[in-house]
Image 1 (cartoon, rainbow over the protein chains, first blue to last red):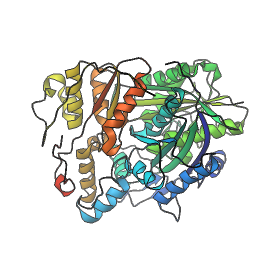
Image 2: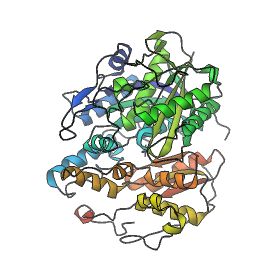
Image 3: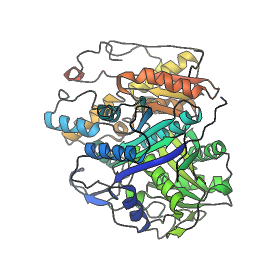
Image 4: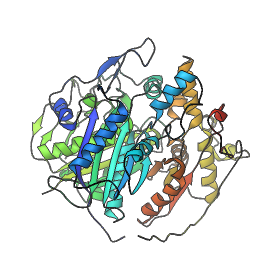
Length: 371
Length: 161
């Protein structure tokens, strides 16, 4: 395949527990704001810390408005020449739960509004897209959507790709992670030695990826994929799959370890993930350790939306020349790692973003500043 | 753009209710591992065996994912009976190919897409685009809808698996 176009992130918008837009999110990260809330409604007689969007608007309306804001920022008049790529872990589960918990029956569930495709189905009621596809690989869903966006532009298949990373809170995920005993009852502290677990969260993150470069665009330089082939929910303790994904992304981007300035880690705050990821980073980068932090202490773990919202954070780090700080780390899990504990202002050229998921699905993306 | 691809091997399984006579016991000798498999995982493992490909990139498609694990979770929440950790880990859409990758020590890229009624068509498009990289790729799609009370919502699908 000889065509080798570049893929640029030309506009983006997001909504999360850390704010109604990406500027509020980035401020919350830089100022280490308290964004995670305590909840007693999802798990009976138990307090869990979650990342919940607070808005008078419905989640569906927020999704529509977020996509509309990206369209308004772009030079596109509509999405008719755009591929829609959705990344989601739960799709329409919130709607399914509402019907099933009320009726104790499946009879009123609309089969188009239940599965992962419910997101694309909803968006296609509003806009016409050239085509669409939805990825669902648990917590790597929207990272894989972004990787695919890069691939189809690189190969000359499409010129415009709208990536929508979205997951809403629902009982299935909150209670499910509780069943796995990985939920924290306090805001999570990724990479802290005495961390207590993760915070399930919700988010909408929308990015327009284009072949044509725009002012201040961010390039998706590299993507690496791998499978742990180890365990359904536990990463390989040495992070072998994560290491392979990072090395593949570096190779795909034709970059060396010295080129990476900052890693926005997967960093969920669980014992198994953080330990494995730091082992992998230490092994890949050897004596050239870049700064590392996890912004999930502010966003929570937004599951299928995580890759997309963290791509927005990575893009803003490059645009603003900022290494975001970690939050509430007192004793570091792995002393070989160069954790950014306070905000660092410096020009950045390349940022790596890790996403890992159930089934040992690993995706690493590299973003680069354009001149 | 026109993409010319060659189909190297193919296999399929269908059942009005459930697909039986699978070789899961022989293909997955470790009982602890076998007992955790979902029906879709068993089907993927069976199909991979039939086409003799198990160390390639895999593109997987499913419109509704793991309905049995999902329904068990929903019922557990409704009846306040506690969610099984195995049901939760088995409820993600990439469950079936993940078990296959663990069984075959397949460390390659493994994707899962879900695009409703157009899942198979879009899986073919995804496979065609990925195959431009020049390797041999496995495309596999499953649906496993044979769950209790599926008739409350299913009024048209004849083959549940």
